[in-house]
Length: 135
Image (cartoon, rainbow, N blue to C red; front, side, top):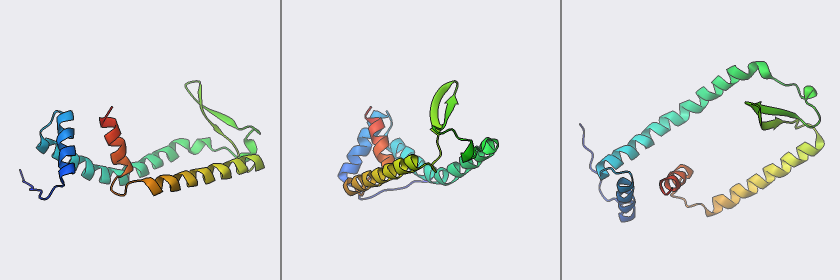
């Protein structure tokens, strides 16, 4: 098997890696291999999986198109196994369009606030993974 030598690892990164290996009951070498596998595989999967899933959903839903004229004034419920999981409403009605504009403005503001405080070295995926490890 090929061998890779990594030099000049920051101390805090090494300690984090060591703790992660301990938490997962792996050697540091095995933990590094898992991290590399996740990073390399997630990049290739990230680009292909959503496109494939979108195409699959498009094929499955082509027969379920709803014309906005068909929508009731208060929308149409979407159910899964008898439980309401969503509602389709026309964005053409004035009150709903105003609500949508307000929601998007709020989301834009929230994104800006999060972006201003988010550490530059930390991806959202890494933050979620770290929190899951701490559970």
